[in-house]
Image (cartoon, rainbow, N blue to C red):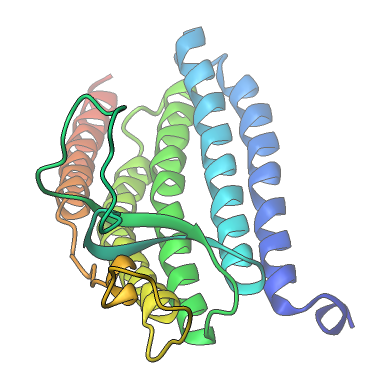
Length: 253
């Protein structure tokens, strides 16, 4: 009944909004109990709280961006061929103290409506995946601080979560930026690709369409998420090694 009333694209983000709030409450309550057995430093407690809030805010932001991209009028960054607005026949007598030589805009941030479903889904998926990167990082920091408060700095769960975080950062970071670029290029094509036009003849301008920006492609694959993912994978190996040392030390006591 609720799915028919609100629609899945509303119910899913609502569920996503509830999860971080519940996690923050659980984390804070358990962290207060854990402080009596582990590191009692207020810095660790503060970091845990801030990381949990950061994860929650990032998750909420990703959910909102996803919903707006599918059901609203999203603000999209579209790529354009290098463009600088000029008016043929116009001579500026005074004002600028510098003169234009070359270059121009290659991106524009616009709010659009009437996009095709394919473009909306591509852009929405890119925004959601990109938003999951800070969620994963903040979540990993929060769990690590929680284990430190509980006296389990090298708990196996931290090592596993570090590896999972590395995978999420690498995959979601690359796929998110790639899909966002593709979605922006599709939106630029739907917004700027003029097939035919008519209007009043402008004296001195043979082709008025030349005054408009033209579409470009932005399908680049970023490398930084891969490097960051490898760093988290290396951190997971460090935590696993520390876990082994911790068990050996406890066995000697």
